[in-house]
Amino acid sequence: MRNRTSLTTVLLGWLAVCGIWAQTSQLIDDRYLEDQFYIGLGINFLLDRPTDVVQRSLSYSLQTGFIKDIPLSARRNVGLGLGLGYAVNSYYTNIKATQIGDAITYEVVSTDDIVRSKLETHAIEIPLELRWRTSTAEEFRFWRIYAGGKLGYVFSGRSRLVMDETGAEGFSNGDIRKLQYGLTLSFGFNTWNIHAYYALNPLLEDGIQVQGGEFIDMRTLRIGVIFYIL
Image (cartoon, rainbow, N blue to C red; front, side, top):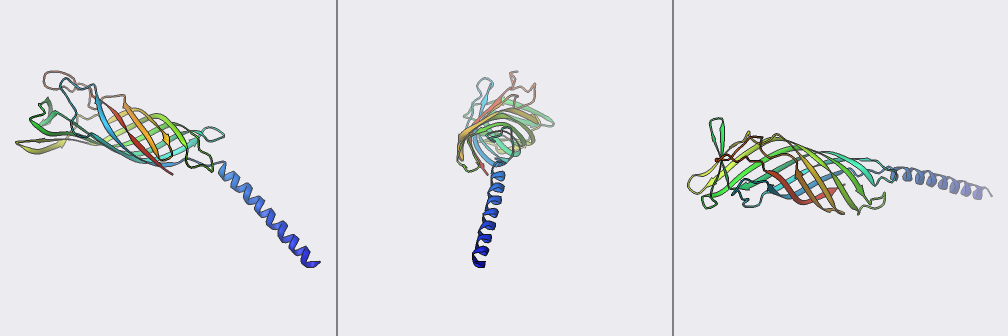
């Protein structure tokens, strides 16, 4: 009799512990977050190019960073994402940039006279997203649509030119706009997602012209893929 009483006490105690653990687990599950690291690869397309300006080679983009998730709904399928990241972007065209003293001049040259002309930027970025997803506490493979904007600060920018007869030359380009911002959209399933960025301001500062007087008001459309890692 004494053994049966002890066994019953142990079983009741075990059930009570399991109940407490289940409630605790449910509480934790109900408060899950979609904090994510991200890595993105893309191609930069320059819009509003001056006359006779063409893109050459592969104007690539690489971005990486972390986004903090802020749920806005009880189901936690709608939220805000605020992040911090780094991006490097290259733009290959037939615009020849030349520095003479403190002045920089721009000239549209024939593609037969140039091997490669690149404008490269390195930036710290702050993405802000409105996020919708089909995730749950138990489901880690889900559909998502993230739409928002991105503010970037260009801390380094260079122009680099490769000509047949002169070899390579480059310089730090102060005409690149320091603050750049635009709209973003990411959508997809699980790890693989399509990512797009549309710049709302030009790549270079206002008033920059090519020889001949046409303004360089090029802005970026970026299309690529982005990988989210929990």
